[in-house]
Length: 408
Image (cartoon, rainbow, N blue to C red; front, side):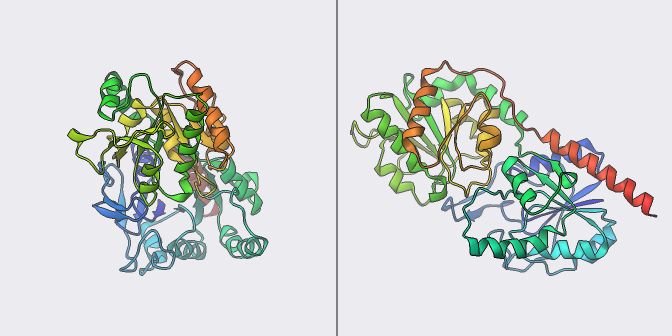
């Protein structure tokens, strides 16, 4: 059996587990450390309590492990195992252990237990080599993390920058396997297609005019996402009279909420005003018109992708990937991506998308202007799919089975 150890049910990972179950060729179980996100829970970065509107536990085998009572996915030391994972793996007949990173203590416990039992360790993490690291920290990381990665047998890389990190820690080509980051492309494409005919209606409810070029920011309003860079780019376009009809659509919430609103001409605000009374708050020709749609759940988010003309992801190096780009592309939306996002080298080079230097809002404004001058894109995006990771998993597990039989 393949045991997949992860912190909690995550909306981006669950479709992969469901796809593996539908494929049926690999016996597996997902082992969760916490039940975070299965019910209403507080997200400190969104600044509110949320619950995903998808069934996060349906369609695949799973179990919850015995962890510390205060275990949380956001804490390294608190998220640790209280049970013997070695005993659980031995009883379940585990042939390979799949882990999702090294950010919590339980992953380290699991790797050491697996190695003692002679169980293969597979790693599919998000980290990459884009973050600037001081020399002293680089030395410590090389020693400590190096000890961990030496115990990994197979690296399932999600993209170019992720693969490069593993290579820098000595992983050769014979230990590297593609498992590119993907979302449930079919669901997002279907959701978008079902409501595409209502585009004008959706824009109208958010006070976006038919003539406006609508740029979407979707995510947490936090510093690493750099949403204010988008506002600066829009202000530059208005001041130079290059794109006076630009309209910003913000989906999400977070600590920068008030800062964003103060720099925009807010015409709709789902969080502060009743939907029936959303009149324009201020008039300032130097501020971009903006609508704040609030938090939209997984079955609602397609409205934003259909309403917008492009998506901008301005994040810095702390954005280890940026799956919102995958969602937008699956929904038929073009994207402009910061050079420091983990997905930039893979998805930014797609003919539908573009890249700009992180923090250079003038460069971003030029990319937006260029996109606005093009005809609306209607092509089929080339993007990662869950099928690739399922295929890699099936192949690796078959190899492991053969090696086990040969070793008997």
